[in-house]
Amino acid sequence: MGLWEAKDKKPGQVSGGMAQRAAVARAFAVQPRVLLLDEPFGALDALTRRRLQAELMDLWQHEDVDTEMVVMVTHGIEEAVSLADQIVVLGNPPGPSVVAVMDVDLPRPRITLEGAEGMAHRAAQQDLLSYLEIPAA
Picture 1: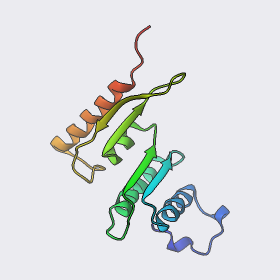
Picture 2 (picture 1 turned 135 degrees about the vertical axis):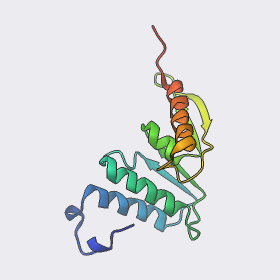
Picture 3 (picture 1 turned 90 degrees about the horizontal axis):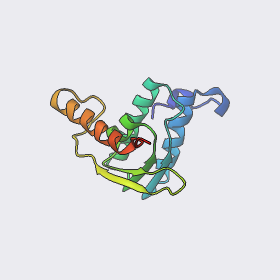
């Protein structure tokens, strides 16, 4: 996870990105069958977020990891399409419900898709956005 250089630092001495990486590493260290993440990258800058998303995918797909499923809550459209195999869109209160379930069938890695694959990635983002649009009053 790229944390070795900070091994002697106290929690208050590391950056937000390092703290997030440590949290994800701790979660995977116990090798859960299902990992639940609630906005794990929400407080990070765009570059750190992108790097940690890639690290999360690499860690999850590593052969020594027994985690079968990662469930992540995010408000990020691009993040959802880049990381998920399946997206569950939830509705707003007062009666939250499942609005749609969308499969994401794009090749990995999805972080740097170009050409036709990049266009498919953007199309998937547009599909997801269509589920989130607020109806006209």
